[in-house]
Image (cartoon, rainbow, N blue to C red; front, side, top):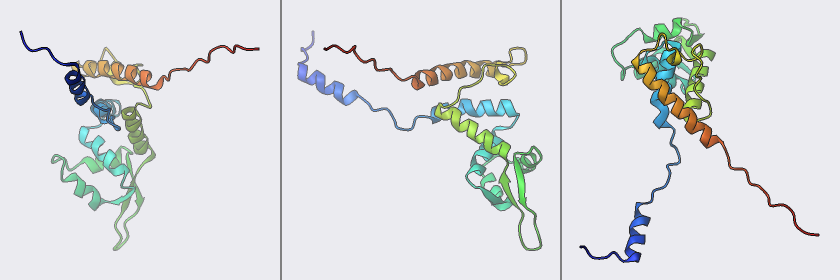
Length: 175
């Protein structure tokens, strides 16, 4: 039988093991939000990542797009697909020595905003199959079923964090 632990040593070890909650803890749900965007809007992962990058670029030239494109796979048609799909639009036509300038469309900005809201816990994932293809049981694949269960858990976590305890005042006593 080992030596008995003194109480002050026990308190010290518990204090060292306690941890603080991180101030920014929303990226743990990013993969689910990214998958949701891919399935709902039928985009590739690279296209979703590119839209997230372009949101902060505001107005950009094709050269800025190509520079960021270097870290992606060798899919050279992403820009044309985003342009044709209405995710990006031409802000200024090219003319002689001026380059054409592009901007994220309202549709693209809305998608990025929805991803941020889902990661921040401000918006829940819809469980209606018409709004969220992951919940369409007749057409869902295995990964859709896995991600839909995670979406339900995230919705529950978000609802619990949004509920604030109500302080009840004691009844007034006096005369």
